[in-house]
View 1 (cartoon, helix red, strand yellow):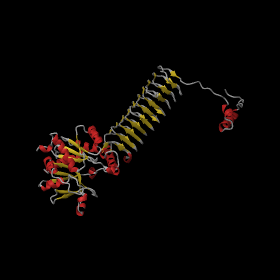
View 2 (tube, one colour):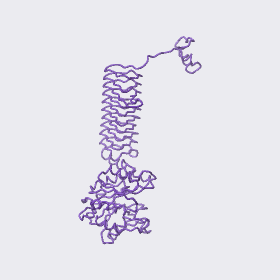
View 3 (cartoon, helix red, strand yellow):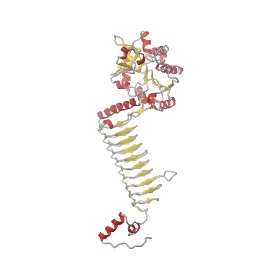
View 4 (cartoon, one colour):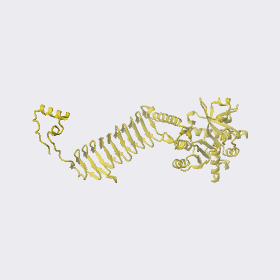
Length: 496
């Protein structure tokens, strides 16, 4: 079946979501890297509607700002008073009419699709099937339904003997026999535009909630002799709404399993799918390996042959071919091909590791470039720096980039050897092939090929411990060692 292009998709996103117990509007809560509303918008986009309308209410400023970010061409309509789903759709069509863009005015317009903004598991494939069935059947209304083991809380779908939809009754208005029906209304529909417009003008508030129910459109259309049909989803998870934190966690776990299954079937090895979380916009190449407790967030990409984890979170990062990233937290970082990272490494925004580079144990790097083959192996901080190719940064080196007022940059050339426990006080430049002595504080530029020593000459005061710390374990050990070596006992004199 070919799906006709919808004249409009209306997404209902005005509800307060009190059961979330949150200052954040319900539809802006996230799972799998998108907001609830963002998932619904993405599914709707697959229909390529002529118009996308989002009805907002609670938290309207924040929701409107989010809609502008994810769907700049959408029309936002404010439902100032939440008077029901029917009322929300009516004001959406009224807004389009005011703009001279009413789909109901065009007899050849495609269907109007109504979706709910808190159903993040909905897929474009299911919506395409809904719209295609609507077009094929000639129905004025096609309801998206599901069959649930426990339908409690959902409106029940009433069918005729021929299998058409006779009506939808809400849980609070249903009889005992109707509550036993397991086919439920998802709250999502495809409507013939003109029939929808006409029925919306005839809605009443004569029900338990005192609201204009969109479900009553079904009864009105049926009363006028129009045909109403239903499309049952293949996977009932798709119509699950999110109303509290428990349901949010459930939806996130379903997305996790969906995405992990998709990537494993595409050639990615996921060693422990239960602890591996991959956002919907992440891209993985074949032969990637994800070890346990790995979280890939945002627009992260991982190239062929790379391994990530365990215990790793990458947010908006790029990982090159055959790289290996272990026990790492990284954000807005580029990890080059064959680079190695970790364990217990922190890569902050602006970090770029070249081909074969290394950021080792307990290393933090920020806004810095580490050239091809260069290494920062242990216990170091690299901030606001450029490191050339083939250089080695000794353990416990600190790039001292902040003077208390401003940040400054350090440049380390090619094939440089920075001694352990070196302080590079920016702004400073270490030339190609240069060395620094361990324990140095480098405040001046180092010419190519030079050795820079920035430390005082060692002074050794013999016998200091026994004179100044008598009767301690250290003094006793020192005396015993000297006795074994045949050393004379220290003179009893004060050191200067």
